[in-house]
Image (cartoon, rainbow, N blue to C red; front, top):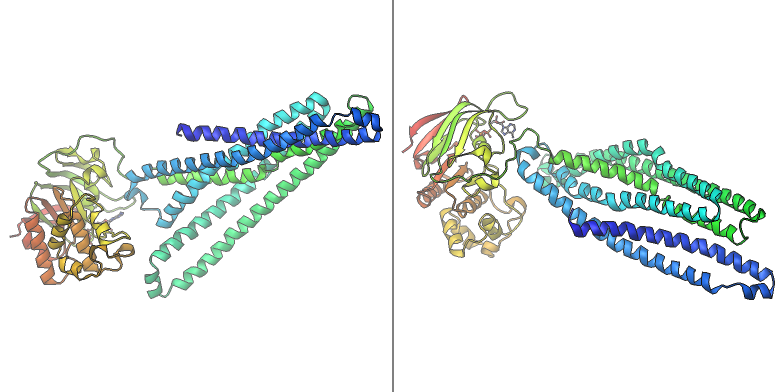
Length: 552
Ligand SMILES: Nc1ncnc2c1ncn2[C@@H]1O[C@H](COP(=O)(O)OP(=O)(O)OP(=O)(O)O)[C@@H](O)[C@H]1O
């Protein structure tokens, strides 16, 4: 945690304690002042004149002012600290998620991931304001309250100590039930969130399948389970608060009896009786929020576990420390590689070997599902091979991070993604400093010039979420242009001509291979028309790479 945030958190506790102590002082002194003034008044004029009202009245004003100021400052400082904490926690989570993507995040739904990233980080950071601060305030102020009571009447101090302790133990009584309900509510809530996000993203498909309404009905049942858990939690918290209130009044009554007895014994003045009783009532102010704090603790703990689970590497390639970068020539050498996806039985590759030299144009062909695209996952270290070795530019790929690799290899994935933004935003995503001339050049190669010119807003055209405003073929060519703009030594194209008619396919491949004559191109494809543009073809078969010889 950064220093600025840490000090804000410490000051938050100090100010919260100051506000509660001032509140206690205010009621404590008010009790004495009112009772003292009444007694002096009843005792006649001489006594009334002798009663010094100025000092306690000043004290009351002082405590009232301190209470308002401390409470205001506590809100500002503590919440500022908590917000900084949230920011730091989100950065921490994000940094841990980066090396896990995409393989390590595959088992989490997008909506669930979003929920963890937004609401779980919020709940963990709120541990400070909602849990640590109330419990710390109760402990610190409780000691001071008991100490003040002990100065006047040790027996009343003991009763107050027992009362406060009892109030602090009430949240423990409801702890187990709270934990269970919080867990049940959170699980259902995250399920709803995940499904809602997924449904909204793909609403078109659900409408076409006529299942949009039935999904909403499923959520209603889940939502009523969440509501029921929430209602029970509220009822539990209300009961716990009720119990604390009963304890408050029982303690105040016991203090009253003890103080009255002490007065009869001449140990206390009559004005000190209401002072102790009102002080006792005020002392419980720090205990009352504890049942809610216990509930928040359960939520924060669960959110923390969910975040840790999201950030834990499971079955993916080991995260590596930065190492040597690949060096020219950027050759790929795969020796005796075996690979299977986690939790699957059949291997994708078995003792497979393949060499691709820098500058080669290689077509990778084979039946659907044979393992062509898996090469990208291995190259970028998204998954680790079970056996054999893969080197790129002389460096073992296990020692390279995906972001290092991305500087050398541009990929147009089969399931490429265009972001909600303009055409220009999407094109410049991987090459923010590209000039207009360079953009125009890659648009020409990707056969997009005429299309872009036909758009009223040209490159400023909004492509919609996931490029939905473009046809499949147009969107794919935008992805190709985006990759070309990065000018990397390697270009991996997974089905680059899918969705294109034959003339456009020919034009695109001719332009790419001409423009990237010295770039290594690996083209995974089912389209035989693409192969003549390659130097050689490799067939993936029986979990091995089988060279087919020269394509042209
Ligand atoms: N993340 C994954 N987890 C588990 N299995 C996977 C995963 N990705 C792919 N597979 C499986 O690995 C095998 C190879 O998939 P891959 O995508 O490499 O095939 P492909 O040859 O590119 O297929 P296509 O030509 O249809 O794109 C398939 O059987 C597929 O089901």
